[in-house]
Length: 340
Image (cartoon, rainbow, N blue to C red):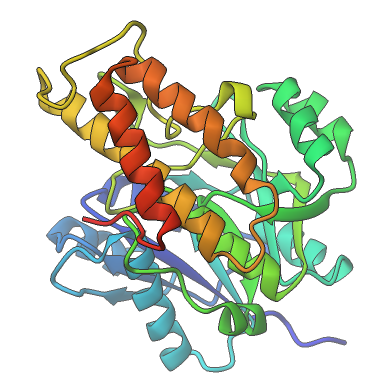
């Protein structure tokens, strides 16, 4: 019989102790339970420390005393994991706002074995069961078909009922075996958390075959923002890229694009406008950076025109907005990731 897998869950969080407690409880309920979780507290936050200490799942806490961001937090958590558990077989990257059903980890492990995959990602659904995001296929026609399926989970599953080779995924849940992680390297710590999950998963899929598993649907349930809807903490968990087809590319997932031009965004009327403008710009820069830095970007460049168009539709077709798109893409193409 093969040895039982030894899975360590990695979490980067910041000031979201209630969500962290919910996640750790769902990990504790797994039929194949992680032997431990390693949580990077990007606060620091006493409530996060309390949630880790009272968790039913064995929990190691990394406290850097400063905000390392999502990628830096995961890298720090992974370093602790390899130091404390040198015989680990897999790393489970999970957002603090994810909720796993009891058999999800068991199913992801089985899929990794069946398909000889170094990394496996599930479909993501919201709390109502609607499809939120699918891992990006290597096949461009399949990627287009998934966009047509919208939020219909069953329709999307019928497009590839047995799964498919994955190009990249966003970050709420990703299982990676030890060898693939070591070959690809940890998440980058110099990319602000918009699009860094795409960059990391592309490196993983270049290091070993990557697989999307539609039989597993993990709930991604971030808290609601009164203005923009679901919004992940910029420095705690990643704001997903939520890429769309070139003609309908979306802003970062969690933002509802505002209708109508807004010509004064560089001198915004509110802090929310300024934050939205900056975060969307960072996403554009990181996507362009990933296109040139990734060892295998696949069809990621096809999404750049649509994301630029959506930026302009959101903030106005003004000289300042055109300049911002140009500036962000140029910096990314020159190998400069978006950062603080």
